[in-house]
Amino acid sequence: MTGRRNQGTTPASPGSGPGPRDGGGPATGRGARGILGTSAGRAVVGLLLPVALVIAWWAATTAGLFSPVQLPSPASVISAGIDLAADGSLWHHIAISVQRVLLGFAIGGVLGLLIGSLLGLSTWADAALAPLVGAIRAVPSLAWVPLLILWMGIGEDSKVTLVAIGAFFPIFTNVYAALKHVDPHLVEAGRAFGYHGLRLLRTVQLPAVVPSVFSGLRLALAQAWLFLVAAELIASSMGLGWLLSDSQNNGRTDRLILAIILLAVIGKITDAILGLVEQRAIRRWS
Image (cartoon, rainbow, N blue to C red; front, top):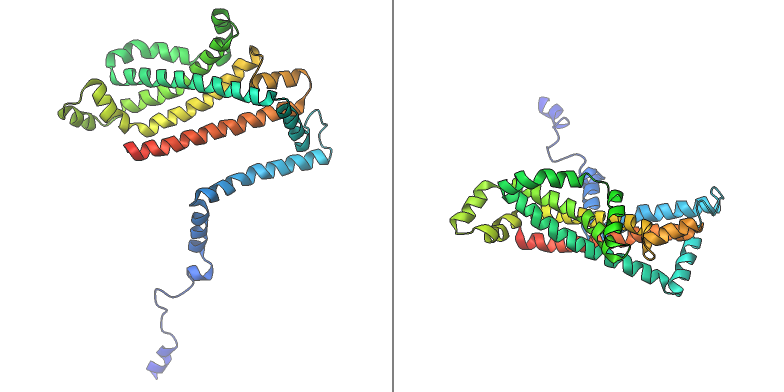
């Protein structure tokens, strides 16, 4: 009798019960990882919010919540872009701004890498130059504009120099801080193999800080675009920053929003290209 009663109360085995097949959490997690595990999936997910914003923008303008001067419709902005592209001025604005950013970013990035390496590796250089560099870093970007115009005029030199100033400090700060925290045992091992000076920096120390270097480069690129707009808003006759200022003065909000969108899109494209270079460098050096 006892055995018969126990037959209906046998405990469930540890593997029984609801699991992934019953729609539990692990399956959902695998689905999310599957979507985000590919570049195409991540791109689609990343486009969801921008598309939603455009739809909300279109709905707000269609409902008349804003006047055309305050917020023109997406169709008006597209039409403004087509008009500027038709006469070729849009491509000229884009080309001149991209050229200024790339030149200033290259100059500021190289100087930031060199001076950051110098201060990060030399105690004497750190003690002598770090206070001055820190003080210069605290100067706002617009404060440089009158001085650069006075020294260099309103030509390309002053604009590229301002962009270079903006690009210099992020890469300098990241390289300087990263080299300060390189594992000393790694450096000693490099010296034991006969590496010194630039060879030690190139072979041992810089590869150890590649992620920090590229973090600084990506911040420097973003700063370069910010400083470019500051330069073109004040002293320029071409470029996307000038298009912003000119559109404001003429009440062309459609062109103003077009310039903002172009700055965002081109800035993201350049950052994505730098991200691809970063992946290759990390695979090569890490």
